[in-house]
Image (spheres, rainbow, N blue to C red):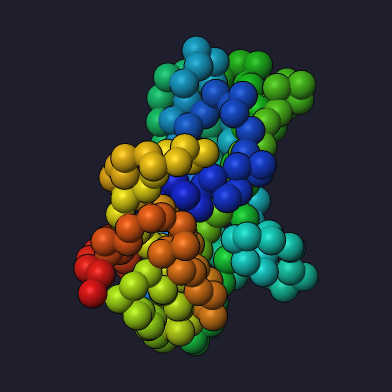
Length: 225
């Protein structure tokens, strides 16, 4: 599962800030069709307290990340929190939208600021704005009426014919790029398919042996014919 999620994170690598002192875990979070919230742990890795706020924006999909004007149907609780030095805290991300057949995508921001005095958190507490860092992550809400469906031809072609995204990892053998008559070595290729998208893994490797598909924590392997 981490391999596939890591691939989504790579697609969106330009959205993240590596200089942050807080760790928000995986950069792509899923709310499954039978879930209404997920918990995320925020770790403060510095010796100074961090004031963390959240912001949610609905986007068209996790590849183009174009913001939508519709109000985000997601609630983060608590929306603001103080995380002590070398401490961690949890937030819950709730989906409060319609129970329909539409998959929804959001950009979830965690905005950190150094606290001047961690022991005196009041309305007048000053925050060092120069230390403000925003971390962008992706939140995917699976359709409440999910249709996880796909088509394969046993030779490397995979098409997403359902209404929710598919994470896939193909395995096979590849030759070293740029070398003729190179010995084939084991390799893998991953992809992230939105509804209606397709990929032919046979064009990405010399020998296609099969692919694994994820739906949440459920995994299915399909061998080549």
